[in-house]
Length: 376
Length: 128
Image 1 (cartoon, rainbow over the protein chains, first blue to last red):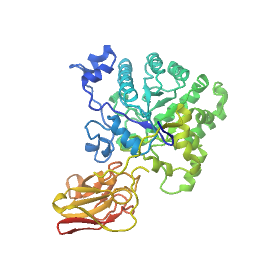
Image 2: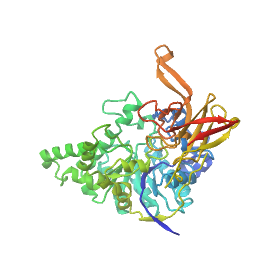
Image 3: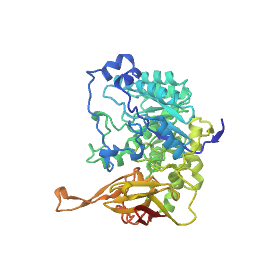
Image 4: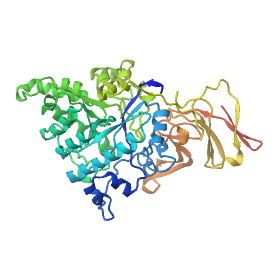
């Protein structure tokens, strides 16, 4: 088959189970949990949707044109997602990050993630990936590190599982209790990625340092605070010294915050470095080597474009960033548009090179025909 | 390139459909121009816009057509609903455009390309 060079890697795509019946979902879940999750008497704790974009009653925070024509939820039909994201938008490889599955009980959460992995591998990577355009995430929870490590081992041999995905609504990432997860990930060269799990039980919703936010707007704008604490903990708790091959990807939390975080960590470290002898290098060096952020969502200033580009150069954005669309969510960023928002010198690394290096992806994929214009 | 067709070299009038095939509230998308052109019937008046959102390039004509909300101290809750059936929302990020003027509701300096439409002998015609 004719090959085409990879020019766009999308590091944030959200597949959904769509129209699967309870029986079909149960078949993916660990046997001892099937009745509790999907049986006729299964408890149904409320899952809140905190997102409030315009027309949300209809859009449920999705791109309105991403609902599959055959029914079901956006990005539940691998063929339609392939048409829309790969053939129309021009993404060459999409990294699938299933969301949800957070529970109050860590054992239940772990079991949910096992079911998610069984489904993702079966429905997307094994049956619908002949075009080689999808890669998957091994979902695990840091709240049950030993189970998580075992789950990573279970999937590490699957060639299309390219990262580990954890919820950020947990204790500090740098806690040594998480080490078994990082050891397993590093043993198999898998980056550990994290993405807010939006429809979580209330108890798993991240609170702000000052308590509950008043609006969805505070919640979204404050999302990076969650990631700031994890970055600091990974650096100051010495996680990157204990796991020199660990790479951590912060998905959809923005990225402009990371430069001031690096400055502040460096300043404190310089003043009091002897307190933390295991932190051997300047914190910013650990960040630039071990941490990656995705491009979406962007929050560039309305004016001062030249200064903003200087800011991006300062934070070494060409090294830190991975392109992402967030398909099929309403905050979707188009590849052609995103590319134009960055200085020429960053574009290749941002759009695909950083991701090829990080995930060890092939530099070419089988060619598929571009979508031609189809009048409705 | 995705989402494109050969560029039109000159302007000319195209038949959209018969008048009764485009009832009020309806839309016809034609493979014209670089991104396609959507022709809308808004309460019996016809408008045509390009199928391209000036924000990130979304397929604008595939959005929902409704009204929009405005501050209105007289209305219940201080929110009024205006321009019903005349405001299209981009399916990607829900930017709102007034079909009649081609202007965005939220950022009136960003506008979309609009095309003249007329009815000739029972046919809807658009000039692109």
